[in-house]
Image (tube, rainbow, N blue to C red; front, side, top):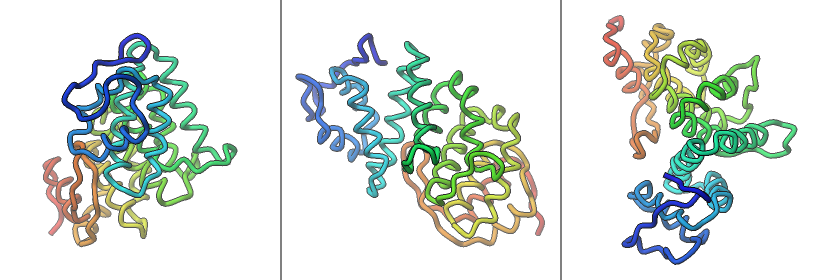
Length: 248
């Protein structure tokens, strides 16, 4: 847990310098390792704004390990900050939200995923910002036009649903996720099915039954690990997980 001054205890056998603030290259080295989350303590002597800046830059990387591990560590970092400085954590999320607005002049690659990860780790932030995250897949809301950002928003919603499903039920999330299952983009379809399964609602059963025939395979980041899974299997997981018998 981050201490006063945003420092945390170092890990002696990490192979990364613990004599002072860690460098960008060292952060990327951590992100490439399978035990990256256990090295969160290496942020001990580095100011939070420096680590966060590096992690946010990593969200734009094409390397899936670097990008997704950065999502996890960003969530850990900001949620940890929220325990001592809730307003400071709010401001970080507000800056992320601003970066996803057209007025910002930016794109915000990786930010919907990071927001979802943060909210999954802090209930106060989840209750405040979940409606904004959900608005990114609402046509009448702050809908994200780029498919890559839509995928990220759906992943973020699914990540949050795994921790606070009732919150998303109260926001009628399944209604908006249902339309995403019609997408021609397999990652949007797959992440929508995955998210609905985690919310625990019956969702749009006819669409879910149709997707039981979707053989498209996607890569899914879940539990800090990657798995390749067919969309049909995600649909089957929904039916089995909630004790619902699909039509023949």
